[in-house]
Image (cartoon, rainbow, N blue to C red; front, side, top):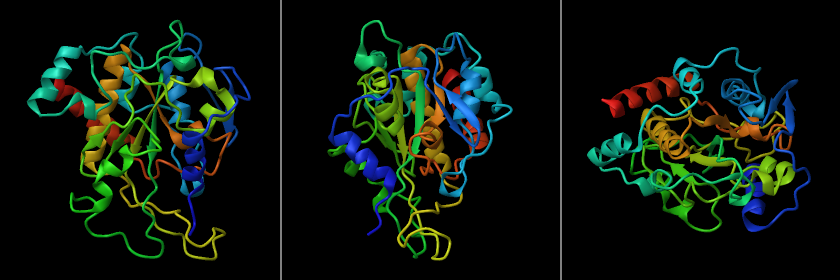
Length: 299
């Protein structure tokens, strides 16, 4: 059976320790001749980093050019020097909707992790990585008609709470979520964090997995049998994007500043360039859902 390279590599990350090859937190990586740099926002703005780290992802992990502009909500938030939402306002919204803080990354009373494995003087987590699970792979079969309903087994998040733990939070296609690893715990979910940045990056990135099944590209296009090239269209449901927005808001409140969202494929473009997640992610739609959710919370 074809095993997605993404999960083979991330399984190794989760099961073993790796020696860092480079230790600079400002190591640049290039893809499609466009460099993305991880750096303090005093040197490179959150907006400019996000424009590179949110490049659209084509089939087989081919990245588009750096965005010329961010969608309006993200553009506004990432231009702020501090967060414009307080913990208690968010908590009232959660209580009203019976949402547990433990399901969206952990307690709002605790800060997010710090870089360098929670070193006291290191930077707080800065990047909010969006992945997709790329599983299960239905091969040549059609996607089940109920993939966006609670009855679909892929929306049962219990499987992601077992070892090895691959990300901080998982979000189902029906808008539920689970937190295998609290956002206050330093973690690594990408090859870049392990093989390039090493321990100094441990805690600088928060990771969220979006449940998304795949299909195979038919033979003759260069992929091996059983590949997982194709995702559903649209890639993610409104409920899923809403919960991702809520998780992003909660993480940012705990940090005290709006985090820089990033796609896994853009993070790992230099290390493992064939990553293609999150595929079919509608950034404009997520921005609109984020705007609506913020308005609801603040009302």
